[in-house]
Amino acid sequence: MVKVALVDDSVILRSALKNVLESSGFQVVLEAGSSQELFGLLEKSKAELILLDVFFPTENGLDILARLKRTAPDVKVLLVTGMRQETILAEAQRLGADGVLYKPFDTDDLLTAIERLK
Image 1: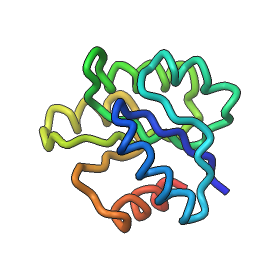
Image 2: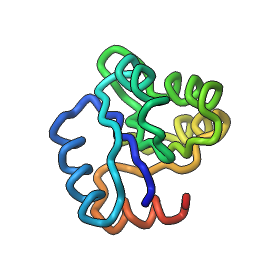
Image 3: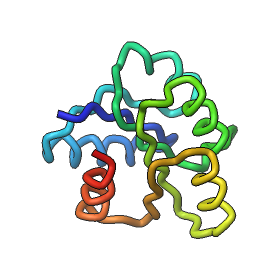
Image 4: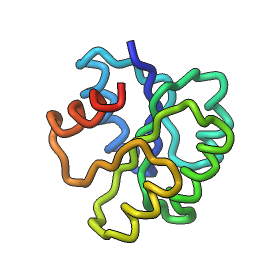
């Protein structure tokens, strides 16, 4: 069972993702609305995969990604964004993102993206 962390400032989206993932056999071990919450709980959670939003009101998901790849390089990171900008994709790849999922997405898109990372 893959252990997943959800990092998004939207409580509603985190809740919906948690329901989908848990009903599909994944274990959501961490939910965070900011990098402070994420890094405060990451080591204890033993997350293997992080779904990370790119845009937060007060921070940048790409900066969080860079920090994740320095502190937890073995954890897979799937970026989630509503912006289809080549600059975001290029920067995500440069920083070591394991995949990018564009909003809006459906359950099949999410599960397919995760399966590719296993």
